[in-house]
Image 1: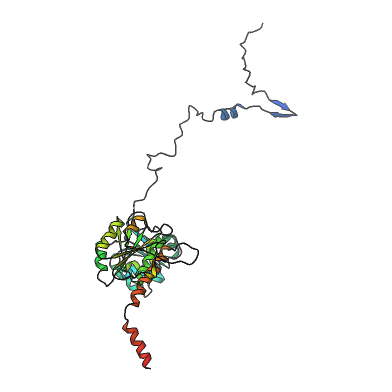
Image 2 (image 1 turned 135 degrees about the vertical axis):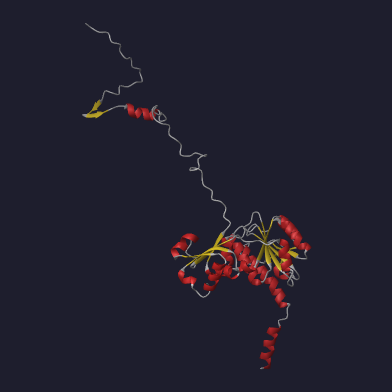
Length: 332
C-alpha cells in the first residue's frame, strides 16, 4: 500500500543545505542557513528580543556633552607674575605654592598678607602644580585671580594727560596672546601710558598675556572698546595725534617728528592695519627694512616704533644729572 505524501517542490535557485558535499574525503556544508541569514539580512531583529537602545540620546543628561560654566577666574603662574600680583594687592582667590618657596623672603610676608585678605593658600608638591598649570615651567607657584579689570577709555585719557607728552598704544586685530603680552611688556618698560584693544576679533587679557607680560599689567592700564574707529576719534578730540604703522607708508619712522601727545597704532603681522583704521589715522609711518623679510612681528615693530618716539624725546631733553657728571670729569 502506497501513501501519497505531498512532495516539496524546490525552486531552481534553492540549494539543498542539509546534504553535505564530499570532496576527497572532506565534509563541506554548502551555504549554511545560519550564515546565509546574516549575509542576506543583517538588519533582522528577533521578535522576542528587546530593541537596542541607541547610546546617543540628545535629550539625555548623560549623553549630552556637559559644557562647563564660564569661570570668572584665571590662572597665572611663575614667580615674577605671581609676585607682581601680590605686590599690587590684586584680588587672588587661591595660591598654590611649594613649601620651599612659601618661606622665601620675597614671598613669605606677601603670602601672609594675602591670607589675611581672604586668599586660600595651598602648599602643594611640584607634581601637583604640573597638573594645575599643565606645564612644568610654573617655578613653584601659581595663583587663581579674578578677570582683568579693564579701564574705561575716558579714564585712560585722563590718566595719560597727567604727564607731559603722553603716549598710548592701540593694537588693531592682535589675536596672538603672546604678541599682545610682549607689546604690553615693551610699552610699559619704555614708558607708554596705556593700551587700547578692540573687543571683537582680537585677544583679550588672558593668563597667557599675563604670563608673557611678566608683571607689566600690574602698572599698565588697558582699555577695551567696542568700536576702535570711534575710540580713535575720541583720542583725537582729546588732543592726541594718531600715527599708524604700515609697511606701504611713504614716511619712514625716523623722519617723523613725534612731539606732543601721540597714539601709536599697530596691526597684526601680515594683515597690518585695516582700511578703516588707516583712514582714522592722521599719518602712516613705516619701518625701513633692508632684508628679504617683508614684515616684522607685531611686538617687535611696536618696540622699534616706541623706541624711536622716546629716543627723539630723550635727545631733545636736557638731562642735568648727565651734564653734571660730564663737567666733573672735565674738571678732573
